[in-house]
Length: 261
Image (cartoon, rainbow, N blue to C red):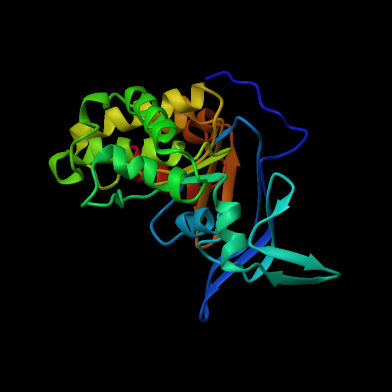
C-alpha cells in the first residue's frame, strides 16, 4: 500500500523505553518511531512486550526509563531539568483524548445501545451536544457498515460487529493516533475479515496506526513498517514484505516458520 508519510515530525517517538513489573523487565531499551500516516505492525510471541509497549503509548502503563512522545508532547510526564514528574490523572486523561485505542475485548457498555456507547465520550469528555455527537456516530456506523445497528445492544451483536462498534467509538473522539491491541484475536475466524477491512480503510484514509497483530496478511498488505519483538526487545524491523519473506535474524525466522506454516 502506498501512502505519503511525514518523516519530519514523528507521530510517536520512543527512546530507550524500559518497563518493569516487579523484577520482570518487560520492555528493555525500546526505541521506535512512527511517522504521520504510517501503519506500524508489532508482531511476536505472547509475552514479548508488544501490548505493554502499546499501553505505554497512552500511559495506561507508566514507564520506568526512557522517554515517549506523541507528536512533541511527552506522554504521561512533565520534564524539569533531568527529572520526570508524572502528570495528574486529569492531565493524562486530556492527553488520551487524542489517542484512540481498540482492545482485544470490546469493552462496550452492555446497558447502552450502540449509538449511546459511541456518543458517551464525546458528550461527557468533550462536551459535545448530543445531537451533533449522534449525527457523527451515525456517520461512523455507516463507515464501519453498521448503520442499521444503532439502536441494538452489544449483547445482540456478533463479536466482529462489537469490535467494529469499538472502532467507531474510538474514532468518535477524532483521534490523531489509533492503537489496536490484537483486535481480531477474540473473534471467530469468519468474523476477522470485516474488522480487518475497516482497519484497512482507516489506513487508506491516512490515519496513523500502531497495531499489535497475529494477522500476517494484514501486516504484509497494509503495514508500512513491521517490528518483531521477543523478550522485551526489538529483534528485527523493516518493510513488512522484506521482513516476512526474507528475515535476517534467526529468531525472526524461527517465529515466522511457525506462524506462517
